[in-house]
Image (cartoon, rainbow, N blue to C red):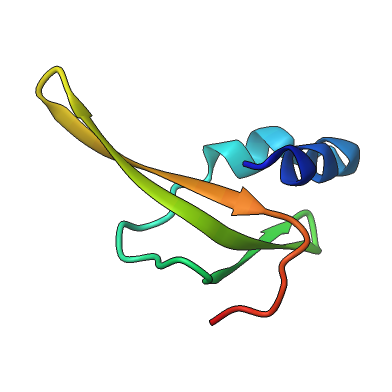
Length: 72
């Protein structure tokens, strides 16, 4: 998460839940990400994707930004 997105999520009390969310590998840059937690919807945009490889494993790291501006 960007610093802005992390600050927003922390202020809303949902940072842990958003960090625990697992987005699928087919998500793309610019995708709008709506996270519904306890009846409230929090809107982010997928800003960056980065594959991390090493030690016999590969994982996708995504960076969310807030506020969500448009989409693709």
